[in-house]
Image (cartoon, rainbow, N blue to C red; front, top):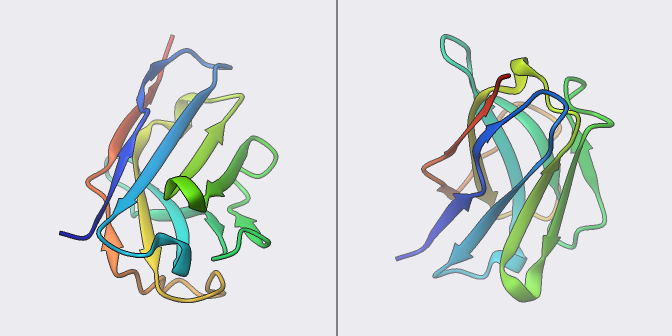
Length: 125
């Protein structure tokens, strides 16, 4: 069945780095915009990064701008989230989602067709 699956999460010390991956299967991922989201305990899910279908446009939440980088390799059906200078407040479950539109949405409604199950990132000393 069509799905996206995240990987790469785990424990990391403050100031450290991680790379998350989101692999799509069962659908043409290159026809989809990809978003990365996170949800910390007791908080709402927030969109932190998005990359357009062709990879030519990205956007970031202010909380991660300058530290996180979203990218994609359509030949590998994979999107990435490189996270640097991690802080304890980055601790959350991270999700990727795929929406069947060319560009990232300007509003909150991502309108995804597919959501992953999430991967836990824990930043702690």
